[in-house]
Length: 154
Image (cartoon, rainbow, N blue to C red; front, side):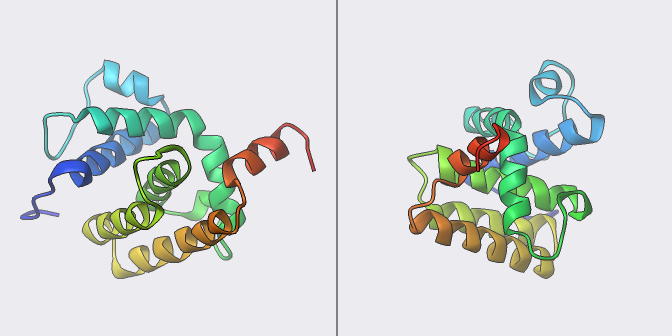
């Protein structure tokens, strides 16, 4: 990603990705990572990055179930950590951030996938998030659906 300058909310999403990745690698919460030493490729740390990373971390099991439900070929454990975390961020924005339009959340995830991953990564993320978006547009509350199932509902 050298030579690419990321600004604004895109930078915040990039920072959130880095925080989530670090938390996953060390097996700790984002709060623990923020309390210790963490590394960012571009700083200072944006408040929206903290909001995203902490929000995603708090809903990770539900977000992962949404990803698993919409992934036709890959289990969560087989997905690269960058892919998982980019999709988690986009899903969080799609279902929890009223100020972010669904197409913007998807486009941002795809663009970051191009910066941090490969063309295959961006296509995979775009396809999966597109399937989730179709459910949301059909009136399905994908987050509530996963929470309901986790609590033992049908």
